[in-house]
Length: 193
Image (cartoon, rainbow, N blue to C red):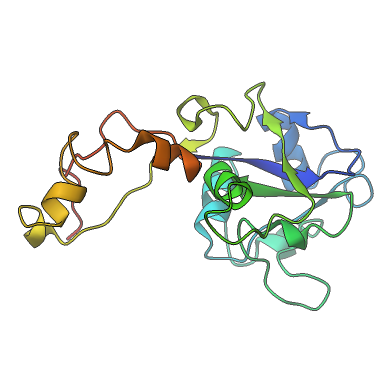
């Protein structure tokens, strides 16, 4: 399990305890202070974090989202598309952006490249971003994708299949990468065509 919250810079005056309704007003440009107090950022169009975050706010993602809601930017000052879960794009204290809790924790834990910069995760709907992701407001399932024809073949069968699999038995590693362990860890019933 992963979850998404919002990030601000450590030196930001933006509250680190917002609700879904407050975030929605920031990302649909209706909050008082948008453009000065709040300068919302989104990852580039096509980002999974972007589309998930907007859907959780009750907003519809589209290629022209930042045209419709002009207070929101998805490119930096050099017109470079903003990458998801990359805090170095938060260059002003007024910036606010969605961020995967798992990506942030993995960056802080040093298991993936640290690109959080001065970003800090904020509490969403009263739930701390350091809490186990399975209790977060904007939680989402994540998957290890394996070839369906190889489910019964090692190493797939021993590493990924069933609650007794190597991955499901390694809760500390799952936590180190910032994820929460799903109750259905090792389930192979979800398949794509």
